[in-house]
Length: 261
Image (cartoon, rainbow, N blue to C red):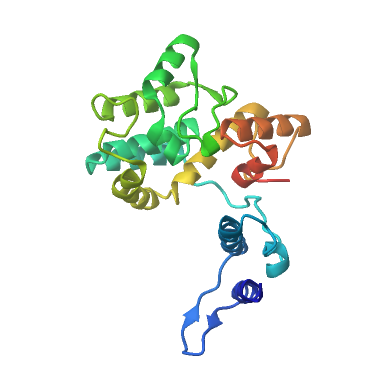
């Protein structure tokens, strides 16, 4: 316990200034959220080894500050920029990476969901009902029809493109010889670099853009990142919808995508 407590003190120091080791090496400062993530990893490893929580380091107590998940910066994931990034990926021979990018922005999918989604099933559902559910590759294996998304023109185009570039004989973007890890390293690594050059900081940012579209469509006004909150009832409904369509169980999670009060 003394060792992990000392680790907590070390991380707390790095929240404010670099940490200098006796040999002169420096560890740079870290964010509060990263500090919480590091302590969470330690606690997870300890639980895996011991199968109990008798040795546990409370992150808030160790760091002296709580983590805030409320987004405060403007979202940088315009549809036009996303399409530009996808075009550059296609030009560089990375068609499947472009499909992941477009599915993430159009349907709010995570990378794994976009990679493993049954594209044929989605197209059948869109043709029959005008909407489709996100079922494959979901976090925690959640398969819930409540995460059914209406297919507008952009959603249909993204889905059609993904079907056109998937490997022959596959229902998803992986081939028979692919696995998710190798696909991430080979395809999505290059995608992230192209995204940044197009002004989009990450694939997750694409989900934020999707979330903002959903919120603004419901409230018929700007998201909290663009302007003041109007109708509180519509705001609550929009947050619940955003969280559900992104695959989260708690409405409060929406604040990390579209901002808070």
